[in-house]
Image (cartoon, rainbow, N blue to C red; front, top):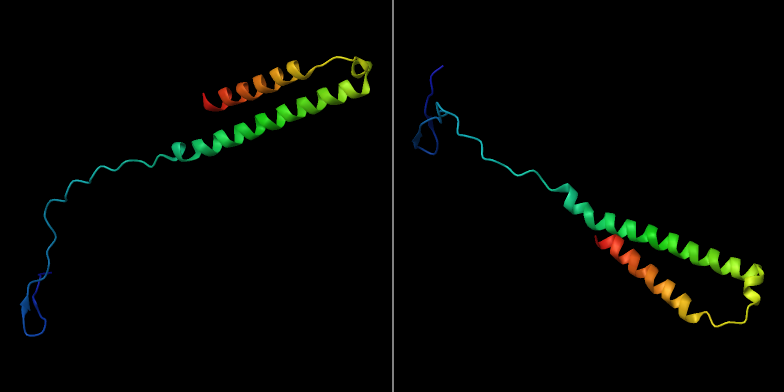
Length: 97
């Protein structure tokens, strides 16, 4: 089959012929799916750690309330805050590492 020209608004135009050598494909970069979900993975991990931490604090408060440990007349604010702040710091370190 031979290529023929055609008349387009009274102008002769030659038919397009494919190149005998195909151009080299351009290199493409694979999409980085892992980096797109890394933030959501960190958020999910942080949420799970916080839920476990809250559960442990609730369990500790329940144990203190229903046992004779709660009858001890002592100020436990400083140790409680130390455990609370230490737990939050541990969660932050685990999420950000």
